[in-house]
Image (cartoon, rainbow, N blue to C red; front, side, top):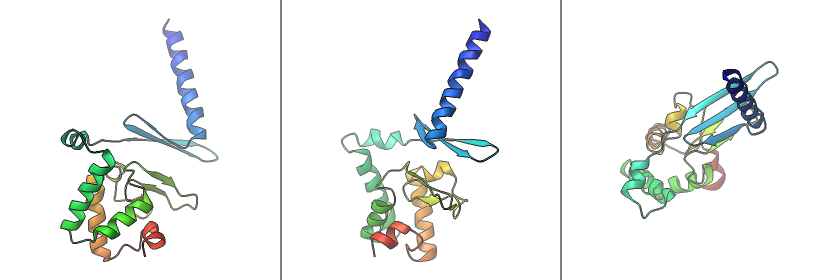
Amino acid sequence: MQTQKTQTKVKQEIALLIILLFIPTIAIGNTAVRVEKSINSINITQVNIKRHHEADKAVKSKPRKQVIMDYVKNETEKAGLKWKDVKCLVDHESNWDEYALLDNSNGAGVDRGLYQFSSLWHPEIKNKDAFDYKKSTEYFIKIVKQDRNYHQWWGYRNGCQ
């Protein structure tokens, strides 16, 4: 009986691996799984995504996107950033999808989260923070204030100027 259960589990894992080979990034519940293929190996990265249900509970009547927009607007304006610039940038980068992923085929890493932080250019921003709209907003404000512009974001350069 134990052998049959083990065989079933192995078959399920193989089926999942086959699916992931054709869909490089997939979200299942609170987990995003990313598969990187190379000639000699397959690397599977699992990212646990912490969702902010407390924000949803506090504002039941608002859609999630509106909750996130309100939070970002409040925090960025408090930091002295212009809302129209921030809104335009996020509209073009992730369309307000806090779990957005873009695998750059040019070797420039993976863009993650609301602000599409590059894993190559911003390795200091861990996946759990990139997919957390509150933490990523803190990083965004820090970077913009440090650079004094939005020019490192493709969405801003190509859609907001």
